Length: 232
Image (cartoon, rainbow, N blue to C red):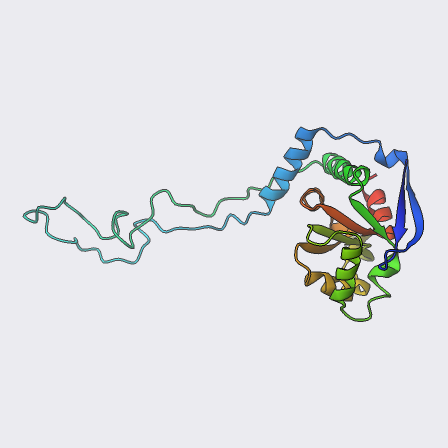
């Protein structure tokens, strides 16, 4: 069981949240986590790099010079790769679908393990829900910068996580919940956007790469509860 202190943007303690052992009692092995992160990174690739071979470049078909009598090696086309503007040999081409499937249980286990490590190492700062919404009637980068300075987080890679909003939609006759952009976090998101090395995501969109690529996490209480519900 872990007890997390909850603070506001002024750095004042306003409560605490108890994280049950049932969520923290997880031990994903390092190889599984590595495979998960590698798969996430691989799935972000577009595979759209494309080069032209000698049959595709826009060049004349005539010989550069006559076959004999010049003292040079014989050449048949300016589209050959040894000439400037010629075709590329074995260059990259758009590939077929390279998507790597990630098992859902492994994905949740890896994400929970990474979040558990952040909690145990005191790299997670819990803030009250109102800090990301009602306190920002307009973008205020200075307010966020002062908060980070007070928590000695300035200059670090930081992930801000806010609670997600959901909307029920009809999918093939069955009502399903999907996450939608949370309008109440709009001003806070714009404030974070101006701070180097800082990003903002909703709880429903957090993945293991987001957790492992940052040094500190600043999260609302509702966002943490949503993650515990999603990854249970």
